[in-house]
Amino acid sequence: MTRPAAPALPADLAAWLDAHAESLDTDAADAADVVPRLGRAGLFRVGVAPELGGAGGTTVDAIEAIAAVARHSLASAFVFWGQRTFIEYLLQSTNAGLRARWLPALLAGEHAGATGLSNAMKFLSAIEPLQMRAAPLDAAQTRFALDGALPWITNLRREGFVVAAAFDRHDGAPPAIFALPHDAPGVARSDDLDLIALRGSNTAALTLDGAELDAGWLIDADARAFLVRARPAFLGLQCGMSIGLARRALEAVEESSPAVRAALADDAAALRHELDALTARLYAGVTSGAFVAAPAAQFELRIGLAAVVDAAAHLDVQAAGGRGYLRSHASRATPNDTARRSREAAFVPIVTPSLVQLKSQLAQQRRSEAA
Figure (tube, helix red, strand yellow):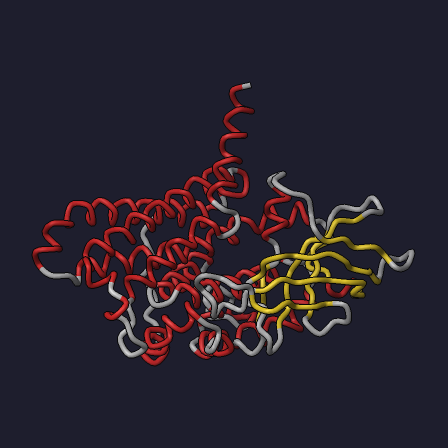
């Protein structure tokens, strides 16, 4: 399919992202500003129907919007992914009341939404058990006690958040997915995790100790069925981070001296062709819905895009040469963008589901097919 035109970010947002990309990667000083700024630019509305307060378009348009932000700052794109993925859960939920209560503030960037379903996605692929538990408090199952912990969630904005999480049920019912508000009694956010990069992404752990919520907070009562439907968007939106970072690294090679460009031209052209091909396949599968029944095809694309990001970041380093390895070359006024992009690229393989997890799933599938 033809790639949609990459959205042009508002000039003031692009300038802010460029000016703060280094600090967003290395500390949390500007973390509170990301969601409101992306919201004011209308980015969370991309791919959401106008009748729901969105700007129209498709999930592919939302992926391109995340890619556009990732060109400037992967930390901001990571936050964008978390917010937009939670919005996607509300769009796919049958709980119209929950959607009506939360969607306006999330689209406007007035409140943070986080996807705590990484554990659930690994559960769906039989990688690990669910780490959260829900126990009904009445026979009608209108109220639940929630317990458990998730060690890593992004966009847990200190100013307020709502997060999706999957809960095992010990009463014979299927696992369920709840939306958890930050101010519910028994919900506790840790300090920010001590990350080596993307430190402005409001990434922390979440603990629940007897938190009580009613059924109005249910995103879906059948986690497995919901996750199968939601996984293509979860992974597709995530791939926007890789697409944008790879594009920017290759652009940096193009911005180098004529001699450097000539030396790296063949490698850069091959990577650009591979990136475009993988992106087109991703967009075709997301648009057609093919990844619902064939998740392995999307796993392979995620792995392929990560490989392109890694190779593009290495070309970026080669193009910068020794200048990009000098600490003295970087300052707050003129940060070393090559070094930052290398740190950002190192994160791509480990974001859940990690490449190791995806490769394990593909190997297991091949063994099953061979048997």
